[in-house]
Image (cartoon, rainbow, N blue to C red):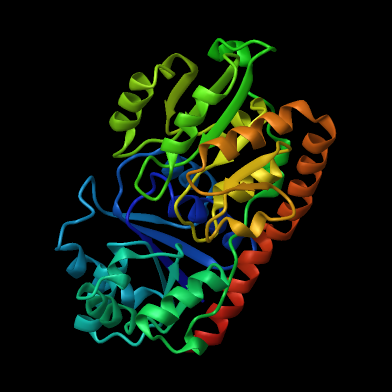
Length: 360
């Protein structure tokens, strides 16, 4: 059985799914290749090239929106037994390519988020429904994701299997802390890391505002990039906290940064089942997150705060740093919770799904 994973590109987000999953698929004997709408070089692409035994194809270099990608995708249907697509607009291009080609190859789609503005739009949801009907299965990361698709797109529940995300626990736990001195930090600095894309889904604004409620030795590290970066930098300047915020951009050494930090925070408006959250919990540092769909699963392990509540977030952070027992217990609970999300468990569930759809 040969499987082709199709995704827009490999900057962040769904890219981490493939970087974790594809080598694991190959290790279990499943021939797995990757097709990118945009093959621009990124750290995630380099990782995949180094660690994957399969082939990596690119349709363009820098233009994932090129409508001609629909026609470029069609020939790949002949060479694979299963097509597995991730993210938008790859989902649309693959759906149209399948419709035009009339191919019988099963196509599955992984819905990575618990919200989708297109699916909830009063007009655009009809386009979404047409697209989703091209997929034989739509994998949902959580029951919340499944409920969103059921509620908005009326897909038969039997076609909405739940397969939770998985992470590479060995890589995370074997990583060494990045040296603080390399960033100009000292032992007295309290480092708060938020590893997240700077896009509308994420709530960086709350963690920037919280800096005004924390002592001067508390430093915020933002690892990630995106369309909101300039606005966030301007916000930090307006609040006079930019001197205590380090905008690192996209990073390959995210596990090392997690272990260098004292606390990891993910403030978001919604999630699917966040890989960053799972990785943070496995890192040996206390994890704090906004209490929204896709992050509420950490309850009982990490610590939750009301979305957008700056005062509550500050209280949680200060409590962790003043109460050693709370800090230690949170770390222990997070690491135990992360053990349930090993990448091998995830890929075995996907392989079982692939095999159920495989047309011999």
